[in-house]
Picture 1 (spheres, rainbow, N blue to C red):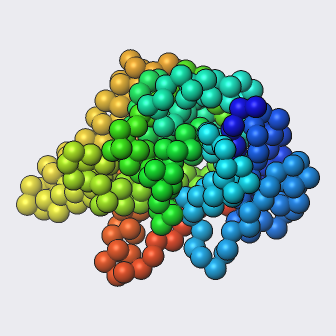
Picture 2: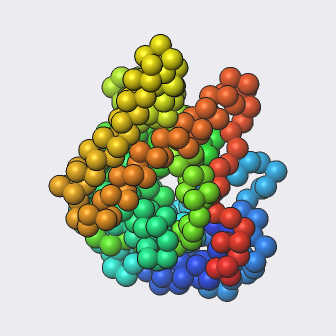
Length: 337
């Protein structure tokens, strides 16, 4: 039998967890579910489906990175011969055919450490925020710098770099992929359906929190790996500071001495929106409405991203540990039960 294991992580995912585990249980050698304090019977549900379970020590601050690492360790403890591991979030369903496709690619290409495919939002029509997630996840096919939380990885490569950095509250997947590439491994995105994700993002506040978390990841990633040759997330970090703070501050600060002419600098926002819109119309299979919505969100996101960056540096300077930035509300999680 193919030596493939699956590690799923989650908390109070309810029916979504059932869909996740059932979608892959009969396609892999062993399934490990890592739970971070569920109160909805997720552990019992996972065990009833046949998954082995790990209960995280909640006295240690939670990160998805630590959860995945502990799931991987448990997987190897139970099945030392595992060659590949499919990581998946508990709110995702693995699409039929993906496991075989990912396995075939990794077997055929021994220099590849990880493969990912198309993650889709299950209900993009439910909200504009779900739709934005679906557009964001449609990234170019071929060799790439990073994958997301859903991917199949070569166990030996994962072990070589000692897994995810458990201290990161966000951006742990690109950071892992960076270290894999430094060791000579490749990352591939395949032209194949991989997972269905249920974001349940229905409010502007949730969207803001998610963008804030991205900003935190940009700041921490560039702080850790911003030097040459990687320049990891340096461009994204500088863009956030320019659009989120420098430009508006300059426009307002110079209002009096320029008799208001400096406010014309704010026209950079609609220009940046149009430029982004034009790019996605030309290079992605989007409708004009989808491209416009996504372009506007990219520009508007600079403000919550700035908040996330400030939060990271503030805690860094004070010697404090970063705290998880969650965009899923208790209500949205419980509604899936």
